[in-house]
Image (tube, rainbow, N blue to C red; front, side, top):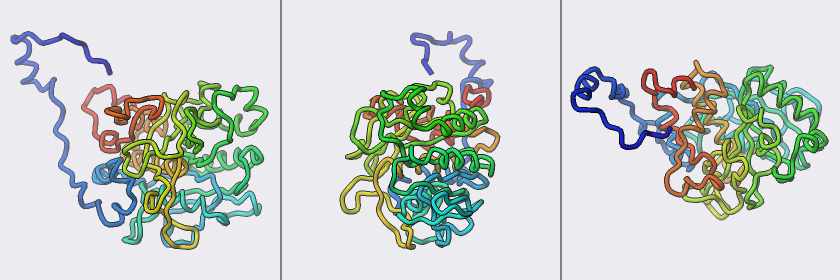
Length: 357
């Protein structure tokens, strides 16, 4: 919010206002984030960068919030996901209830998002959230699976998910997409996305891993269809320590108004984010895919902190409180800035404009 410059209260007016408390913020209750900063927490390097422990100390762990995971499936039998699966979801490759994860991508994203806090390996950013997994297509371009993706979104929403994680995108620059072309590429998905955004859903997409200055089609879709913006987030991947954009990530570019930056890891030994492997081990992952999963989990954790808000109001709060200082002020690269869960979870003062979020 812009602050008026050169404005000051006359001394005769300032004292009674200060005495009445109108110029002071309510005292925040004492919290202890350090009790959440366990070896498991520190093993997932991105959590400290986004100040997740402060959100946990304020009660935001994802409890009661579901996220639809639209990906390569999930190995839900792993201990990391015991109690974390609200519904078995559906496998459109094998056409059956429940999912099999052949390539491991979905299980890795699920770990970043919601793996259990159980003193093993690492835990997800929303370690008490629940997942609804869907499997489509494995290694092929998403546009081959338009119907399956649309059905996954609708089914996830119908089963209670208002946050839809999509760690994938079609390899078309957002600047080359208009409504007519996207209607050729993903007609069923377009209809469903419009409907679900209108109904309150939030879609999360990675900007892509081509080291371009513009995002891919899905993360940039509100450029062509502005009505989607209120239910959309694009995600840029930073290095694990948050020091800069990673070696592969596309910029926010035309999606800057609905884009946020989070750690996604980088290539090289020990430079990725630790997560769950499909066979029960812990593995490194890097790119905008895990960055998107981190944001979806953060939305879930923050929503459990503010259950009175809608998912789209939580989305707006997450974007509005991002850190835009220093290098993160470059909106072309980092959009709204570095996600900051301490700031996002800070209780706003009474009658503050944030109360309407």
